[in-house]
Length: 129
Image 1 (spheres, rainbow, N blue to C red):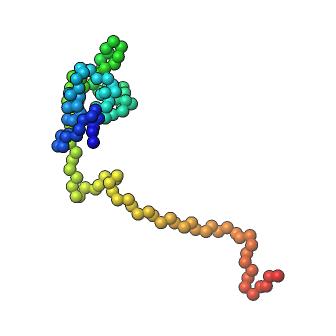
Image 2: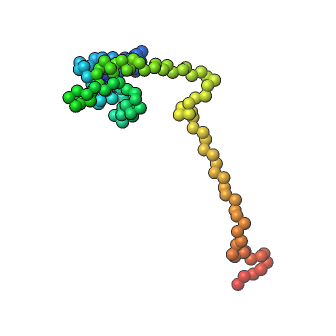
């Protein structure tokens, strides 16, 4: 299985480090937005939301085309906080998406309403013709 940009996953290496290594291997000095999104494994919409929020690497305008300098992309990635997942212990509840589904509850049968009947059954002993 190849990661974005044709990068083969390296066992024991974090995904962020693999992305940084992949961007560093590019021969070009600048990246298009599509290339940056491919290596970051994000959609263009996510990238534009990042830019609108003031995050993301600095953009460069080259002859009217928006580009991202490779050095800016790498320095921006280095500045991002590293988050290590906390190990899950046996006494912690499992995340909801990993829990076994709860058994289905029995549907309560609705109670019959006290609605007058139009035709009452004949009392016992009465013959109806």
